[in-house]
Length: 505
Image 1: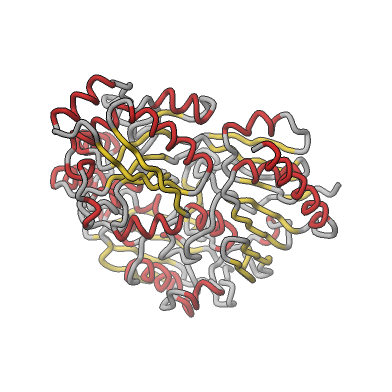
Image 2: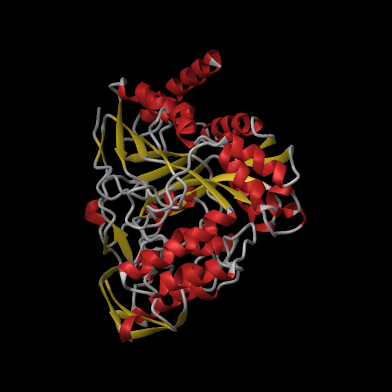
């Protein structure tokens, strides 16, 4: 392995030297995978969210503390006892095709999320009954019942608007030239290789954009991403691997930025989606409980991630305001794991575990494989490209899969669409009337204490049924070249181009 990496590093040095000449105004960002679709209505990958930070502004933004702040909307207020949300839009905003942002344009963009076939935003927006213009620069979203997570949803892809000319366009035609209202527009995409963007001269916050172009390079291996950064062929990289952080910190050409994150990594189990759900793991909660009891989360974090991540058992990390402290992270219990398998009549269980083709996930999967073997599990690891894996998840073409959810500021965004009956991201087709009732109560209350009590009841059911085994939460580690300034650490881990500068030399 060392000679191979050395060879790659040598190649990166040459490549970096070639790119470095005369391209000081091009920001080159290394991301961990290739996006699925560059359409905020249909997108499902964190890689897509990274690219959208340059393509598509949102109605609401997050600041460094994770608070909601204005972006395309300058203000908002709840009306009608929480059954309506009034948004005031920013003046002087244009989409990439030159169309202005107006109330009618915003209505068209928001309706696109709500009504388009295959939309993964519909569930995030909640019980919307109507979206209407309330004035030339005001939009009112009407709801059948209060829906507290709507504001948080509008700080992500549900809050991204496209030009009214594109509001009815889906698929390849849209992806070739998405017309959002962000600081850059797409000029070229080469699958599995790069996305090239150029500055949009009519961007409303143009004074805060200091580079002419942005190039995103998907590089699945974290060590290779770092090698490219150290060589100078990339300016910023996401998701520094814990095993590489010490190396990066000792290199004067590199800076390591660190902050808290929202993501969760888990094993999703196919419990009811097609023929591949017909496994002991999918059909018996005792087998899922045995698998969880076989895993030592603390040891997994220490061995795979240098102890830099946070072991967890819920969709938010311990310490988060919506973490249920009364349901703490369990330790490893091999005797219980073996006893559960005997009780289920399954002393030896075979599991096919699908894993993204990413070195961090592969290493973690191998550790889980070894731990589970001591309890009686035979885990076969299948590495699959991330976008393909997500398609298989939706289609039910999996038994179990290890994957990350990038996380949302409101816990509803982590739970509802993954667990509620029939929702779009519920790939394993889990369905529980008790969990649905508690989750629905949590999303329809605006009282924080009542919401926390509802989510406590929901988590009791979910941790009993185990459609997901939450394992750890990543901290956000970004790497930049020494000459890069202005990269902000936001809890969602996404790289904003606003304010970023490239210092010459």
